[in-house]
Length: 243
Image (cartoon, rainbow, N blue to C red; front, side, top):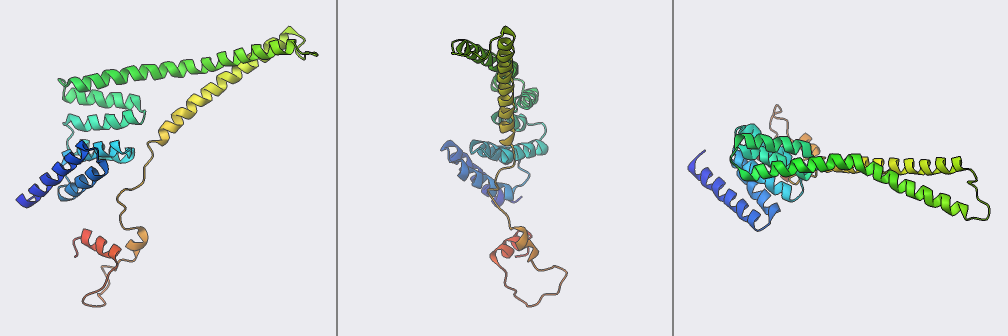
């Protein structure tokens, strides 16, 4: 890479960093993306863009850049740290714990990574405890509701639960319903968290398939010396270095 490109990448990176400091994360993404086009193997640019994507909740794009950072430099702790941050934000606590741990292996003296690892471990413990306790809380609520129904029935003019066994069966049935509802609610919560990690919208859409199909066939003979192209076709040819 020549010196002019180096200056361009450095300038764009500084612009991106300045935007991050001003919480202008969308603009930061644009600056980092332009720099990456000039220097596609610069792992620090992907790391910075991953952080910017994370701040605008583009989780799949943030993870993609974090993984690219790791692929380009497997011995750099920040790549694993970026990955962990995305996993933590998308409630993948156990994955985040492993990523923080890998970052700490590469940078063992970093107190901030150690603290993140400790906090994530505590979150995992709380989540496991909640998974065990919440269904039983639902069962307790159901049990209380069942008892209230039984007592209310006793004070009616014609009680329908005139046998103790029926009272017990109804109370236990409502308690089990409460257990099931709480269990289902917890499962649905985990499912919603999984949805956060699905690929998000493409912030930088490339030429669509229709435009690509309309590009001239390279094997065909040129029709005229200076052919006209649509804007989409021109962008595609520019990317291939034909313009």
